[in-house]
Length: 117
Image (cartoon, rainbow, N blue to C red):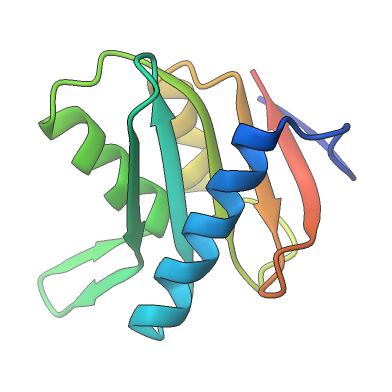
């Protein structure tokens, strides 16, 4: 996946993913929130999981929710985080799912970068 410094003009459906990820992050007070859209248009959200026995990035958790609901592919994903770049684990799970677009956004919802397959 290649990363661009700022995402191109976002589709309204991709902006919706940022809104959902941001709301999930705020509701759970987690470090990150993520939202993904599968090939049928269904969306899944998740927050960072940090337990003594299990650690998942928000994107890993959202992908797990999608896959456990029988999603075969993802159209797009968004991660709301204070981090300046995508975590290696997020790059890996996006590549596993052949996700064509992953948008990173700051806590205020402003897109900061995009990963393209």
